[in-house]
Image (tube, rainbow, N blue to C red; front, side, top):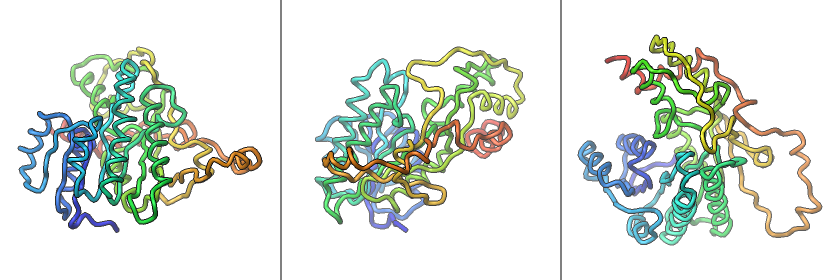
Amino acid sequence: MISFKDKTILITGGTGSFGTYFVDYLQGKDFKEIRVFSRDEMKQEQMRQRLNNSKIKFYIGDIRDRYSLDNAIIGVNYIFHAAALKQVPTCEFFPTQAMQTNVIGSQNVIASAIQNEVERVVSLSTDKAVYPVNALGNTKAIMERIIQSAARSIPDGKTVLSVVRYGNILFTRGSVIPIFIKQIRDQLPLTLTAPEMSRFWLPLSEAVELVNFALEHGEQGDILIRKAASCTLGDVAQALKSIFKSKSEIRIIGMRHGEKMHETLASKEELARSEDMGDFLRLRMDTRGLNYEKYLSEGEKKLVQLRDYNSVNSKRMTVKEIEALLLGQPEIMSILDK
């Protein structure tokens, strides 16, 4: 088991939804130092006052700025790269900004980590990177390729790069669930893009488990995913109405810019070189070189027998199962206890 003892940890996007939760989680561990790297001065100050921990340091910077990264990464053992532009509509309207952060910024993180001989880097990706149809998915897909490209050239015993890929994390920035809850409490209609739209859902606690699993078991260039059940947005709305005993109507507003009806956690091409690890899947990077003879003469017989791992053919949660999942979240319980 990987220990944080005597380790210095850097979290990019450390004041975001995942970063904040992960810092709170790490506070219960034995570590040397945590470095929170973000460009949000106000959130850093709020976190500094709330945590009041001299072993947690704060670095103002932007992953687009290599100099600020280099300064923060000196002496770091582990990096958790969570900084990103992650809102689908925002990335659709500002694709250049998405590219600058998710692609160029991620490249800066990886290059600086390798230069500073960081032991391990775990980068956070999304299921939208599989068969991408929007700017978020495309930039995250390129991020994954940049990481794997760098991983191919790193000598054994040096920086290990891995990626975690997941679906929607409950109660993070942009999650539809807080929006539904606010509409219910304000006695407004629940605005639903499409009832049959399906997504993978993951509590923040399980996202942390996935990141820790990648830190401990990730090998060079791996993409690791946690097996997850899916559900439709219509069923999520019904579950929340049941929990809050709401009579709010459901209003269909249509799909937003860049949205997909269903999501895919792993393509069949990736599954052809995957390893089942119980609750997790390891998707190994394609280690073939630029020997085009292999591409022309060696097919993937295994692909014929595989299918994508998506939110249509995965286990589908019932409304009752969604209720149980939501009632297990502290955010829901804190509202119900008021």
